[in-house]
Length: 250
Length: 344
Image (cartoon, rainbow over all chains, first blue to last red; front, side):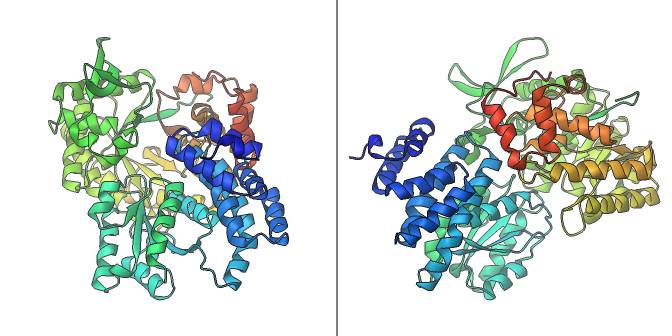
């Protein structure tokens, strides 16, 4: 059994105590941070506070001390972002604060990524993102992209008004097998289905995973069009990408 | 506002509108879950959540599309029609009372079938028209749904409606406005994307104004929407819109209307009411004379009599003018209770 008092960092303890409400999340985070070293807890705390410079400095220092890059990513950066995600979902923090934490995460990942790449460790993954054909709205999609990049993903941004062929071409031209489709209009939502169909026709459906989202999009609609998952906001998008990425990895 | 009228396009009859299950509008009475409201007779009413809505994930996650619920019930598509009608009467009356000049009607999220959207638009335009003399703003992302709404307004002999909206990706909508004797909102959306600067807004909107004038609409029948984006995403978004408003007013003179979905500005941040009020004031100062707003949340009287010397208002203004990176001061002040200024 892990106890809250077993976590060295005061900020992390306070965050768990004040903002986490679901028993399973409390338990999971107490265990996660109890196992993490104090240095990793400090990185997570700085990330939660959106402190770009401190995350940058502590990540570099930890690497210099010989902490493995993967450990910093998992126990520091991703663990911290997990708390931010829960706080956002529950309405304790707001869009700009999540973006600031994502920026801090990116600062940390800038040290981590080259090391992982050099040692042949798979990056978290690459996501192809686009607003579907006929739809020019991209604020929500761009928020998702910022969060995905903050979460360690590489993103290929196809922009707005993306035809099924453009999604197909992006898959053929890259190693990316994870696709995020966004729509803000009920009139353009059916083009999500058309894109999935186009992948079936091209014989590529089984090799990719589709995520869908956007204000009028519902999880039920996602199932109907044959998508693999639905995210209701930018953080749900990142969580979904993390869940689906291993299914299409090499 | 000196002498000119601020034209309020009330945005509350919109099927995407939600109330939260953990909010104060949600209640369980005699084992029935529903959305509470006050009938026009002052009785307390409860619009029950339909089984269909209860089966959705959105409901599961705590979001109730209450206008969609009321329209479905009122149209006899599930639930008690009388309660649905009663609920809509209240939503309309509240906007009339708080000073709306047009009532925007959008049924995009009632169904994904455009046939059903058309039927709902036709019905709703007729029904809202029967409750008030205020003209309708017919709003949809589908041009055939807009046409159904314009036709319904004409049949009912209502005052000329507004077509919401025409833009470079859908320029033919201006001809539809001419055909139905409607006014038109023309937006700054581009042919292949949303504008990313003040300049693009001005260019796109100007092209649409010229297009509309060329099609035969009069300048006083045009509402230009330079597009309002959330300040939570980019600190310069407020300035983009305000600069575009200034330039468009200068270019087209006093007769054209300049409007916008003002509450978009506060997406993703707390104390939205204050932020909206500040943005409407800034927009009017820049030359806007209209807003697509929720007049119940932001009654125009309160918006224009807000204490602009207060600390809270100053913080909202700073944020909107790009002087508060990532809205950090604003959010911090909200947490400390320093934004609890009455705004209507």
